[in-house]
Image (cartoon, rainbow, N blue to C red; front, side):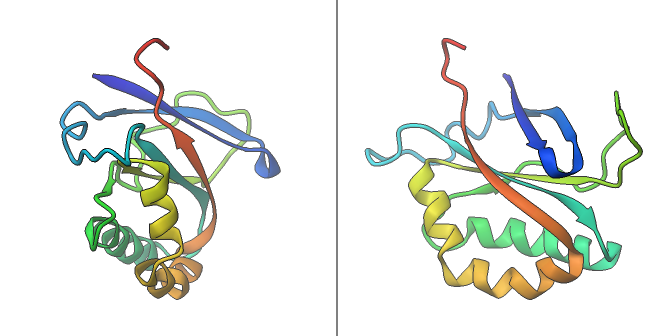
Length: 137
């Protein structure tokens, strides 16, 4: 099943949709406290490609740690720009969590704090949280 995750950053006039296959990740984690998956989407301009690769690997490891049950869904390198109004060096990282509470736990947790310096070296990122689209959408 393919679901769209749309990211928009008005400060740099970037908008677009990234499609990710999440069929295998629906069974990633289930709990009564988690009823709707959430996506934490990082959008930004890379500063240091080596630090960005290191950050991507550290982020993928960190969201799986502890009780977050998250997953990094994409690579930092796009296969190409489909449509663009302006030349852009934007990078998007999409992480999926079982619910908003897990995203909040991660954002306020020690693993995310450990990543702050590496994230700053990697790029200038803005992040937003999106709920998964319901089955009726």
